[in-house]
Length: 215
Image (cartoon, rainbow, N blue to C red; front, side):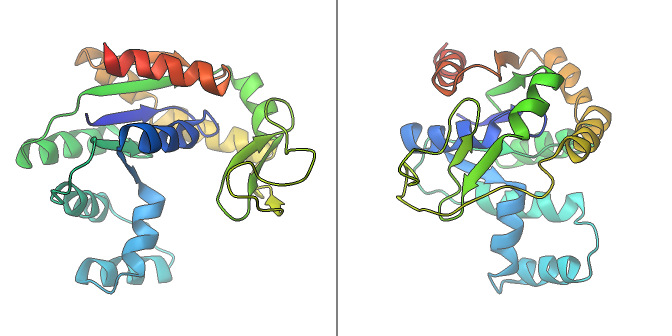
């Protein structure tokens, strides 16, 4: 299955994507990860990405679509792709639909992780991650273990993102609502949209997503 995870920053898309990778052998296509990987690859596309990023310029939709095309053309056996952080705009959604058609693939589900903004702000400002593996912890819902060791890798160093504060988050939320929230209507009109409670406990959200994918 090929799916999109939609939701504002901090909705838990990355956490749920990692679980799907582990349990369903899916491949997570995170825009940021793909750009960093391409920059270090030395390929022709990688050189273009490196030049754009080194100049501090915006990466174009064409570049991101090119990176996704490379991933889709990889015929290694897996359980499908998870689009995380792309598309962000209606133009990108159209470009992705065209690309999927060209590659003979389909988009099977779009899952919106619904959140309440005030609760989201409280969640994000309490968030920290393992510096070694990126496992996410939260002072309110999933605190760092008392022994100070990451449950995933055993690491002992944890960090908070500089922009995980109320003012920065509200700015990021405004950008999401302006650019990305129209995708909710776009995919609803295509009868592809399903919603889950993004503020539930991690296992509860996993179960809701599994229900959508197994339906």
